[in-house]
Length: 211
Length: 211
DNA sequence: TCAACTCTTGACTCCGGAGTCAAGAATCGG
DNA sequence: CCGATTCTTGACTCCGGAGTCAAGAGTTGA
Image 1 (tube, rainbow over the protein chains, first blue to last red):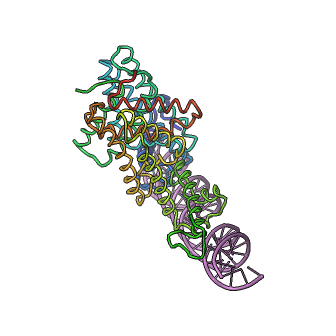
Image 2 (image 1 turned 135 degrees about the horizontal axis):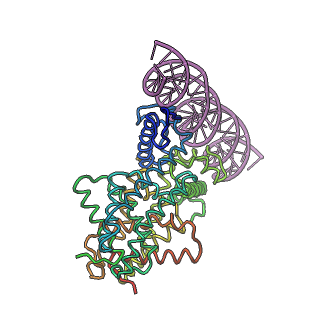
């Protein structure tokens, strides 16, 4: 790796390394998309390679095995997603109900619009190689954490009437995970309306009465 | 039924045929279990055969292909399940809230205790060969129908405060479909308690306030 | 321009699952 | 008990996906 110039700057990667990094990101994004859509078994590395206009061998230059590729893809996708949820300003301030609504909408929105991919992880965790399962659980834990904080805030302030947080969390997560399935055939405004209506329905779980 | 006397009754199948029927049922039950647990791609016919203590060739004596076997398995399992939901007395009489509670408990109970199998159908319908998808949709439609009737009854009687039935239906179904996933590690009384608590949580979706 | 390095290719092996089939075992009806 | 029928077996082919690798194309830095 890179000794560039007389004084090699350890912090700044060279051109080659940056290019390598970008390539890897491309691969991970594409992989996440395909695996998310069709599942681990149903997607071959040949499929992934074809989508990238390269050959299988090229993928093996960057990743040692199918498992390793999938692991990395889950990792990347999970981090990005969680970061967006955690970074939502609405998730941290305002009335608990509004915060929760914002979170739910964001979660569903990401799922439906950007990573229909990702949810398959939560839908059927057993389907993934056991090496991935710990990773998936951790991802799930972090998502739950974001929601749990808001739920607790709402319970503390009296805005939410929830006797047990855990089942509400499970139920919400399950419902959000299913959205890409039934949303698949919708687009545009119809889809947005469906998302909003669904989010509103989920708020019933914390005692919110609409209207 | 059939004493095979001098006069062969055309309506009553002979011994051979009954035996054949039983064998087919055995195969379908086992297949449903395995495919449900691990998914279409992950289970080979060799796996199914091994579980039945026969060889693959034997399965091909009864079914022309993997697809045909899976189709039949889905069909059988779906019919049985739907029949049980539709046949629940509690599903037809009494206060809407009690009827709904009974339905939810039964649905989750079957899913968790008897066919952890089955739910994978609803979790990720795209994962199944397209030939099966119409069948799965039909099965789902029939389940929804059972729940829809109760929801409508509750809305009509004023017991439920629901502004839109469809999202509630979607949400409930999604939540119920996930139960085997998070319930997998529970057994005995702990599991029963979890099921009850979860069912109670789902009732929040129709405006029920606990306590 | 050249040498070193990075990346890509395509042909290869290996393996496991789908599906086939002739032959033999088990069962049935008489 | 025997012939016919039903069922099961195990060895077979075929195919597609995982993983390997030597050789060549593309880049980079001097």
